[in-house]
Length: 305
Length: 305
Image 1 (cartoon, each protein chain N blue to C red):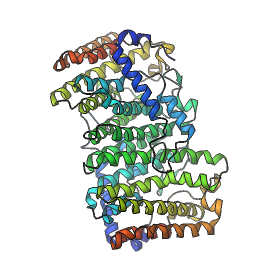
Image 2 (image 1 turned 135 degrees about the vertical axis):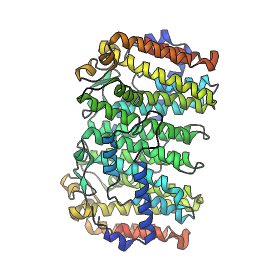
Image 3 (image 1 turned 180 degrees about the horizontal axis):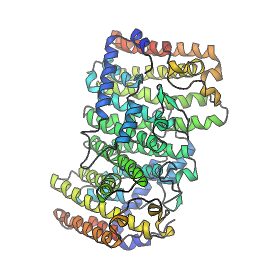
Image 4 (image 1 turned 30 degrees about the vertical axis):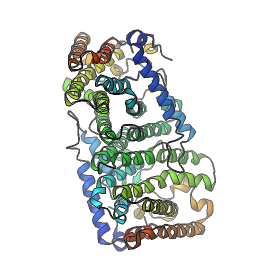
């Protein structure tokens, strides 16, 4: 278990309670005891692999963003719980597949052996596939029915060939050739930004937020997403493995393009701070309701893992 | 290109036209030129890998079943085209991943090199992932909005841990130990039956079919699905590689459980015929409208690839 004492200092009790609620719900969803067509059955080993990766000590940033966006738009956070869990499943699937030997070849994730190390490659590929499909079952079933189809569409677009998957393809391609800031930005937008951004839009949509609110969330998400990725790059460069929960220094070992490698450490830190400031100013429309997302933005730059 | 003259003999022009329509629509969908969030872009290599596997000479049985089910329930087949393509994408994703070295390790599929042979493992894994996600974008967006969420839910359940993925996990596990007819049946129900069955249910739902119609489609699907798998096993045992479009004899080489290996060739042929007869008698509720599905059932036992 990775230390999370810093979270307690950063987040108020409401956010910690929302995270506990998300964790409980992810546990319930992955029992797979009430969600099947006739004759369905999830093999025990597959279930273990899914739960190994999903129920680990993740930060749950994306599902918390879904619920926070519902809250700041004046909606009921409980109605966003299914969507929040669906987003976390998509995120976890992408981590499992990215860690595979054919891709980033990582053996440590969230402080535990990666899925293919703890189980085997076939099981890891299939555990990722299962999470990807299951996310849409949950989104379609447990999201308010008036917006469920639109939520499925948005999540699928963010997870699809032009965003999450496309970003990973180009990220892998860039291990074998130098590139520029524009390429780096495009990869981050798709690989990290799209899912963060859609988390906020899903929360806003479930709350019935106005177009102005959704536009504020979009602007916020774009800036926070970029800050998040820059800090990730910096943490990878400087982090301690026991604090960050995955191998560090791998990006530079692999010659991967990162913000510090392209524009330097200081300029990266400066850019992250600027993006967080822009994110916070996009929250003006929400007045004092926007507080949880302000906290979030600050957490992104202050985090140590 | 694999010969398909036998299809021309078996199917009337309406079915061939529906297949051509499906193929045209799959081509349009995988141009990825109008389906993105801002900043989205599908890398060229990923797109090529997706199209290599998806636009090959598949039989399109599942999408044809979607459209046929819509037709027999008195609905407009055009409204089922998105759902039909979504199902074919799920089927193709599962083929790409099943063919991977970590799984069935196949190098030939639909008469062409498998995706990881033609491209590489990472690209094949990601092409499968992209098809899985994209299927839900299409289903959520291009299915009549009153039933889109329910269609997403049904497809996700059939593709998820308790069905398609779970069946593949247990199928892999059975390569390393003998088993019995009950296990074999359970694997087939999940790995093949669930997606065939859900294809029919989707078509019925899109047509606004009555509970009795949906129940007839369910009974038909259960029986046709089993017959389909038995014939697949028999074709693998006896087939010629240039006719069937993938390596044959692999099941027995790998010591995999199949119908002929458990109950013998003759009993397998007899069982397939019985199941097709049961399937056809489940179509009585549709009267003469049921003709396309009768043709289908007969095609399943008569097919040579």
